[in-house]
Length: 263
View: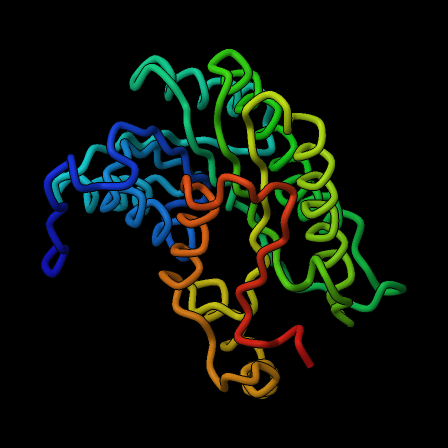
C-alpha cells in the first residue's frame, strides 16, 4: 500500500487518544473518513460487512502509523451492532466519536412501481441501521458523559429525488433521527449532527454511472461547481463536526454538495 502518508507525532494531532468508530468503512466516504481520523491521531474501529475492504482500510491506517481494529458488522441487526460497540469498548476502553455512514443506494422506481422487498432493504440499512447504531453508541457515551455522533444522510434527505423516492425517504429519516436525538442528549455532553453530501466519487456512484451514463452526466451538471466531490472532502467535514472546533454545533445538517441545493 504505497503512497500512504505517515502520521505526525501524536502530541500534534487533534484527535490523539480519541476512539472513533466508522461504519461502512470498507470503501468510499467511510474509508476516507476512517483514514482521516487515523491520520488525525484517533484509534479507529473500522466496521463493514465487506471483510476484505474492511481489513484493507484498517491495514492502511496501521501502515501509516495509526491504530485500527476491523469488526465485521451488519448494522441492520441489533445483536451485531451491540457486539460491535462492545468490541470497541473492550479493545480501546471508550467511544468518543461515531460516524454512521453505512447504507445502501439501490436502484429505485416511481412510487407506483416500487418493490416491497427493495423498500424493506433500503429502510433496514439506511434507517434502522442508523437508529441501532445510535442506540448502542449513546448508551456508552452516556456512561462516559461525553461523545459526538455524525450521521451520514444525503442531499436527498433535504430535497425530493424523483424516481428514487424510497431512498430519499430513508435519508430524510436520518435527518429526523439526528435532529431529535441531538435535542434529547444535548445536556448529557453529547453532540449529534448529520452530513448531507451531494454527488461523491465512490464505488456506489461508479455503479450508477455504469447503469445510466446520461443520468450521471446530468447529475454532475446539476452541481454548480461542475464536478463531484472527492470522498476525502466529505471526510474533512465529518472531522470538523467531531472536533472541539464544532463544540456548539448540534442537530445541524451540514451540506457538502458543491452548491447542488443552492439552486
